[in-house]
Length: 76
Image 1 (cartoon, one colour):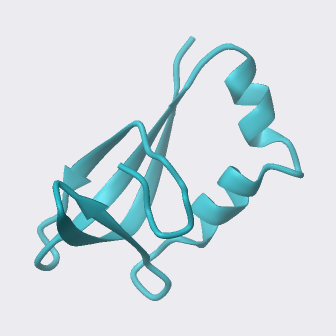
Image 2 (image 1 turned 180 degrees about the vertical axis):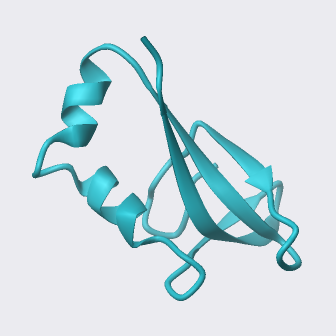
């Protein structure tokens, strides 16, 4: 799934807090961990700004969705 800012998430989980609201899932491993955690990372900065007050908007299977949270999972 890609949102309106061009951010692509590894997965989505439907939330129960409203119609078409989702949590964006980011799965990181290897060198992607250092890239994401760097101070210059646009993706990290964007993800940190996503919340219910400043959601990301995207499309899933042709349907408009709202991303109100982002969870980052770092794999060993």
